[in-house]
Image (cartoon, rainbow, N blue to C red):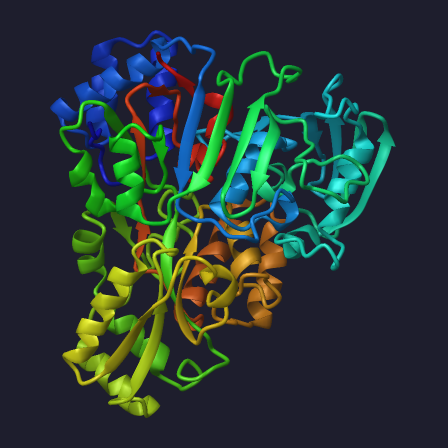
Length: 537
């Protein structure tokens, strides 16, 4: 049974309702709150019922959960620094902990850290919780934090967040429970940055990550890259509550229909990232439910600026005018999306540029630009795969629009297995799929800085790089917002990434799976579901 919400509904709104219920708000007060947010009376009653159930539900311990994601590879890793797929994030969230954690409202909570404080946003003092142990019995100390953070600076490690970690100029242990991080420039977002999946804390000196030795809620029992993993409850977990499951098994079913059918038949409890078209398969099924959230996930069309045809003046601008965004939103994604404006900061983010309009669909303008670029009539390959959510359908929309103006696009559908290592970032025209990130600084640092590890279109701008450093250290929110708005405009106008929509994530769940919530870091509760869900037997 799908819960219907306004298109702009977020996890922050869910949290707001539940918190209001916990504070004792009346039903009348809650309905007024919902109606003020544009929720119809009938839908509002349904949301209140679900929120009340969420507050009243009592977690139950026990049971073995089976969950299926959509991406897997023989390169799957338990090294948080190298994690790149949803399967990596999910396993790392179960086996390790971060210094901080982002809750469903996007607020920073302390996890392994007791506190993280700074008076100038440049020098940060980290105090750890005492008595925390790794799975092998080793006690957590500041040395583990220093080792974990410094790994991201070592080029031999190949950390996916190296460009973000480079701002950490000094990382030292003050004593067993206190560490200090000094940044090259002030950055007020550091506590949020440390909540990213890659910044999980590992034991000092770790070189073998196959055992997943962390402080997390689960202990690894089996890990077969590209196949599956099994983990059991950590009996010595440091938190007062959770995990509730005895164990959980995680694997990938790349084919969307197969993943949904596994849920409907009862073979799995969670089908992650269900395609919008599959919602009809679940409608009317009383034994399944869905979690729908829009937190900034998107599938984008990437055109490399350093390769043809992207290097030809006018080609990328023409492509932006050829993308039928509303058709992608309404037909491909069944309305479970918001129109995008070709930059990665979503409407759910407080720094979103509300004045930046997406390119209008203008086939004649596109035709003129293609003619200027000298590509009109040529056959342009577009690489798509099931690995990038809805990319094949999006490519077909572009292909059909091109045919109407005499432009040929050859949609090359390639297998999910190996897509991220063989085609993403490499093919001249291809699709990506980016998980939500909580701050513009993180998005820009990972995707658009000249040396970004995931610079999908090879966008390089010295001005942009300098603005990125300046903006992250600003405590003046007005000036910081102005800079982030300008940077969004730069990406939308200069980079070769086309973001047609921000996609609502849909996770299909068995009716007896409880405790799932939205999270700003993405679906599957920001990939951390295993620690918080339970089975209602």
